[in-house]
Image: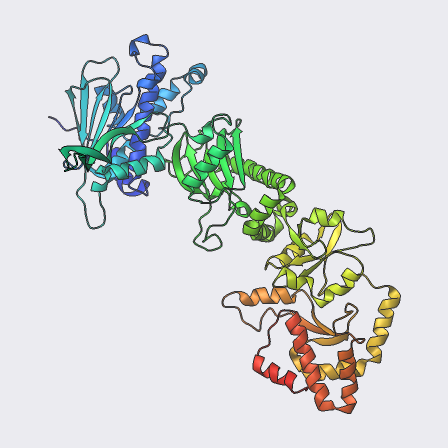
Length: 639
């Protein structure tokens, strides 16, 4: 039998197919199943106008047959089949697609009538079989033909075609799997469990049933009885033909066919989450890019979510065939927590169907999904606050990072989704809720930062604000102050840090009196500065304190909380990014008065008191003493 040769360019392309184009060996099964599905689509379409086909939709199927002893895998279909000439044209010339030619031959009306979405476009997927097979045999009988043809090849050396017999129309692709090596286990593709796994992963939603023999263990009667006359039973491994794919994906079904409860069950199974998502988002879009999607907003973050190991992205399908396990381009970074599936027939896939040729369609889908996710989160905040707060506890930091990132490009999208702890109401509120409750006399959105919201609410600098009846937002996240810096204002109201900024609460007369008090007590301020040295930038009279003796504030762009954040980063120089500390004294407090009196009466005691008050201010600000033992001795020396 004469062996035919691939064209020179085809031989080079075949070598690329085997060694370069596909990144995973297991992709071959997806490609062969997709080709089988296309063949059935063609015959199904033909049956609409040709009564001689004698088959309806329920008659079509794909079958996987594995033979462990022979180390072979066969993918069969009862689709339209190929003639010897079509084998020559489609299998002998790599990258010539019979499917593409079939689609090109349909007019618009026929395409609409057919209601089919053919997967194959490039005519190269078949050759992915050579990644796992040393020899590939194709036996195919075309519709309307009495005889079949047998195509066989061991790779780039060429192929043979001869006439043969086959019962019924359709195609068998028989793979002689390669021998196992130290690096690759090819025989696993003859194991039913592995085939089921790959079908579920890549081809679960191919529209035609995929059948195969599945091994199960059953209890059977041995035909014997025990002494009591009870039949003896034993376990036996049996093989039964089963349909191993779902066929119709849940995102293709209407809400009547698939309820939210059904979608949640799907999510928990497919994405391995033990907890219900807080929201389910369905989209069925038609237009320049048609697609369906089923998205979920989780209630809890995965264990690795805030690590570099976490890989965001949505599962990307084209006509029910999975193209990418995680496609990050479909989600903005701020919504990277969303999980789900996007399925579109309009994607411009590359030759391996594993990546996209360009991202115009993806950008259109991503822009729409961004709006859908924002709308769903806004709805959740308004209608089910408890659920939203549960979501926010897990992913609120991500929203804040989204505002800070890219120089605030997403701030308009995300600002209304933020929640902060209200010191006055003692619950989480939005910026909109804060501003709408502000008295007319209130100029700023006041906030206080600390390691916890409880500590922020009790900072000494909050006293003056709360004395005026104004609420304070408590910041406890590393990103909170950076968010305030990026936003600057909300609904015309500027943000004001109660620790480091002018609160705008003093009248001109009160400011003048404070300046006079500072000048009148210059000796005390200079004395305290002299005793504590470079620990602070300056010492001044406080206009904010009412009941506390001292507090620690800062000057300049770097606040105490920002300093704490920067110093928590690995490799940061502890002397860099430091806040310019200011020690503020409450002249009306007994402790400060006692210090002032001790300056002349007991200078040594006064020096200790100054250092203790600094340490007290640092502790209240969340800064632990560098030497706790020395601090303890300092306090004890006052007794």
